[in-house]
Structures are given as C-alpha cells and as structure tokens.
Image 1 (tube, rainbow, N blue to C red):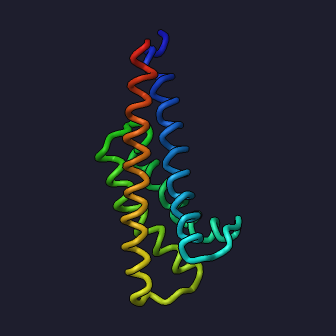
Image 2: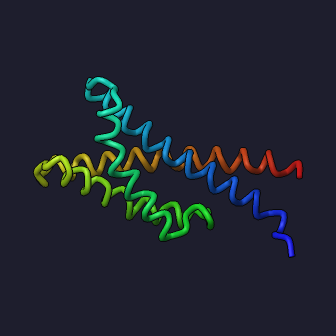
Length: 134
C-alpha cells in the first residue's frame, strides 16, 4: 500500500519549519552580538545560539514539533527550550546566575518569540500559496 499523497508534503513542511526555526535562533544571536557591539563571528554565534539550538531540537523531537506542526507545539517548544537553553549557556560559560541571567532570559524569550512567530506566520502564508495549486 502506498503512503498518502500528503506525507511528502508534510515532511517537506516539517523540514522547512525546522530550518526556519533554527535560522530565527541564529538571527537572534547575530542581532544580540551586533546590539552589544561585539564582533559577529562563528564563535560568538555558536556561544549564544548552540545551547538554545541543542535544547530546542531535543524538545522538538520529544514534542513532535515538526511532525505535528501546530501553534501549541511551537509555543510549548519555545517555553521549554529557550529557558533551558539559556540555563545551559550560563552553565557552559560558568556565568553567575544573578540578575544578568534573568535579564538575558527575558530578552531571549521576547525576541526569539518575535522572530519565531514572524517566521511561522510567513511560512503559513507561503505553504498556503504553494499547496493551494495542488
């Protein structure tokens, strides 16, 4: 028995959403470096984005964020992964968990949510246009 015609579309959609989400987190890291007048380098982007990306994709796999791409799954992934990723970043960099942690956490939550929602809205529009033809 062959798979339903929607399977390849849903896999492609999941891959596109995953790439877009990762790019949003990377853009957040780049904007953060620029805002703080730090050089934008691979090391700087990795230092700020990799802990969040690592936790993001672990949580996304558990919640099936890309096999069941709903707003609920996106928001759950964001609500769990971003704080855990910020915590991991502070642990890896041996930074103190004082006021700076909570400021960085708040800024990270606000701006990653903004970038992710903007991307997902754009993706929803693009998917509707693309798959309306089929």
